[in-house]
Image (cartoon, rainbow, N blue to C red; front, top):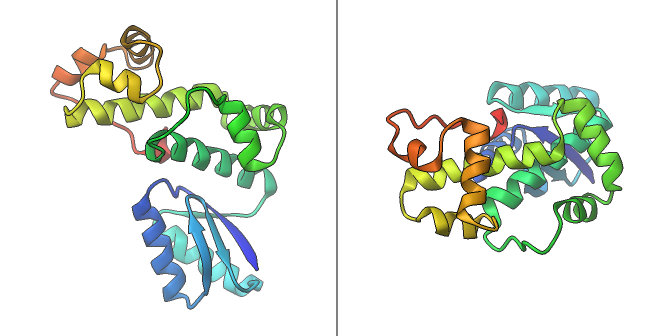
Length: 188
């Protein structure tokens, strides 16, 4: 069994694209999730190079060093928490969840992430939340109060302050703006 870490897998379509690449290269996939593919067999260097080239051609990167893999796992877990977990428990601390899910002490994760990315885990978490808020504002299905509740903010005022400090606009200004600039999740 071989676990591969893949950079830039940020959504279900990414999983599908990587899955197709694995099939095209005749690799037997045991499981696939954001940022990670588990294969039934080990790969030799030639197969890894072929796979790396195939993934690169569709915008992904095969990660080989341990620190990059851990940072990628952190990013994938944060993206999963914010963008795909509808039942995110506000009573569970982010640090506890990340540490538990990755099986690594949070202080190490925090230092590693800051060293590699130049931003703290907490800041990255906020930036991802702001992108999700932008998405929800563009959809125009929820009020700001409902978005604040969904995103586990203590109040709509707290959401508004954090949104404005990150984007320079209030949620209402963003919503009424003609330029609703959003970043892809791998650019955050």
